[in-house]
Length: 111
Image 1 (tube, one colour):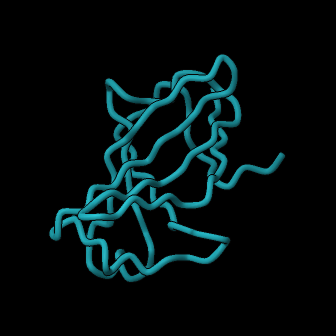
Image 2 (tube, rainbow, N blue to C red):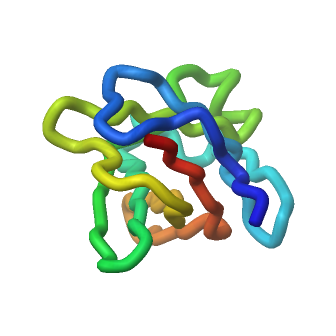
C-alpha cells in the first residue's frame, strides 16, 4: 500500500507537517474558514491495531496557505506517533455553524 504522507517516524516530534485539505479529491480553498475568524482546525490520526486516536491542533499558517488549502500540524513531546505502520488521518474544521471534514488520508510511520 502506498501512503499519502511519508517521512514520519515513531517518537519524532517538532517537525512541521503540511497537508492539502481535499474533499472528493479536490484541494479546497480555506479562505472562508480563517483561524482569525474563530475557526478551529484539528488533524485526527488513527493508528494501526490496536487503534489509538491522536488529535493535533492545526491550521493554515498564512492567508496564502488558506487559499492554497494547506493545513499544518506538528507532533509534540506529549502527542506523537507511537507505533510504526500505516495510520489514517483526517482534517477537521469547526467554527460558527460549521463542521467540516476532509477526505481521509494515510500516513506511513517508520521505526
